[in-house]
Image 1 (cartoon, rainbow, N blue to C red):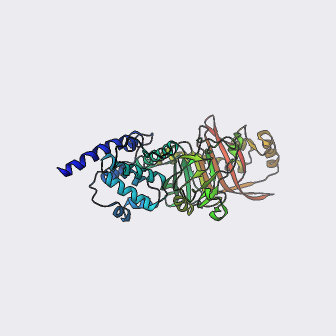
Image 2 (cartoon, helix red, strand yellow):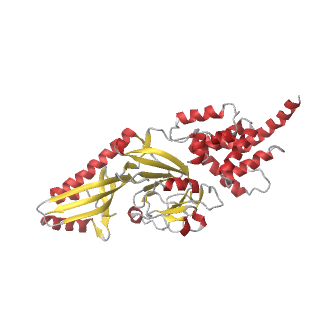
Image 3 (tube, rainbow, N blue to C red):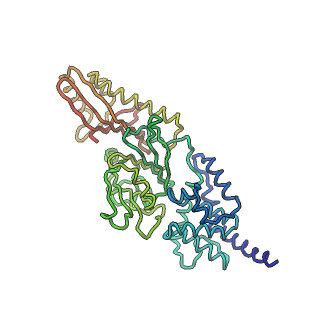
Length: 441
């Protein structure tokens, strides 16, 4: 009877904490998104979360399971999911063990500290809200609640394994990895250039990120928004040269790019960077426009970044394509680019110029000026040979159908030889791809 008497109040406390912490999972983390969930990962989670909890959290952390791998690589999402599952099941002692193990790994993880405080408080009194401690500031609690939601959604609702981001149509051979950022999900996806499978993007890992305080689609300096578009890493700024705010390093991006400038977008100083030394993770919306990772995650990602090469594609919400649809889009664009090259070689200037938008502009030169120059130049050519190497094709996120094309161009003719790295922006107009910008990369 004494044992039963002890269990009864614990169940009551568990129900109250469900109203705050575990209800968070039911209301938000289980909400369906447009993407199909990864069924095998969900099944694995359900199997783990309903299994007997005889092993201690320390044992689970020390094991070679996916649990331990997730802790040391792409964040604490799996651990948080288990913690909330234990709370939902009213196994508060197990939840506390897992939380303490997580804090052992990351002592300055504020979300885990808040959960621990709730769990300890539940031993002495019923609690009815997330962050029930008397001195917990409401705005800080709201930030941590938002972080818990996006982390758990990302864990439970992985994109389908046989789908890839629409934007990664083709990486050039020496681009080892590409980064895709989803601001709505506060998530970064790392993809490898799988050259054994014709350069198909291969998923490597995903990470929680922080972005602009006022969301995405940056327009002007100081608007506290993260830009949307195709960018590249331009530098590696080591920790020793940075303020503590930027954590273990920073990687500037080439914002604004040429398409941004065409759209009148301004501002500067958009970086990938880490967190302050006393902070494990920042809230989902907390930067002035940069993309922020935990220092632990940045250190892992940094090993794969190539200055001047690694593409960073930032989207409001990632579009996913089946491999068949992805291959079809890539083939269409590769044929279009090769037709442009072949028409240049033909010296048929009118046919060549059909690849250019009437809205084309490069520097101070508009379409009519460019067309007149090309006709004059081609009149003096007896033959032209154009070779395109190291081609990359990235689709720009957003409502406009734009692709960013970069390649090494080897131009030869009877009176001129020239090599350059070129970048073009192609825009779909009336169902056809047209070049709207062209210049050196």
